[in-house]
Length: 210
Image (cartoon, one colour):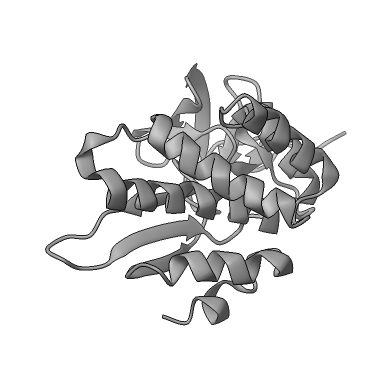
């Protein structure tokens, strides 16, 4: 697999060599996806001797993309070492994830504020706090009118893609229960997903200012 060609546009330049070196140790397929409502990325173990599979949303800024890729790669390495005997975000996974983040920090890949947060967490052998890290990473998000879902009040309307409108409801840990107003279904949406806030229901005309 030519990971360099696939990933170089999504990663900080200095991280491409170490990351592709890690990936090349395993039979793994990387899939870049559009923005998904429930997650930034995921890992799936191989089936019947096939490939490991990692998917990552393609609209993330480069530092967030790197951290999500390391997050999923840590799952892969734990699966290789422990199989089903390790908890998904247990101590084995935390050790792998923190270790790779520290290597990236040692090479000066992260901006100083993110690096400081990672090193502080690593000294205590725990993963960086997600909310604090999300706030730091937002500085490098593109300016396109989108905001994190968690910044909206309950009851707000928003869109992730232009075809569907959602109602933000109660928080359930790191996700929010949201109702799709187009089909009436409920979804758990990642609080860090960047969305467009809207002020009208499907089929209605936007309100005009006087």
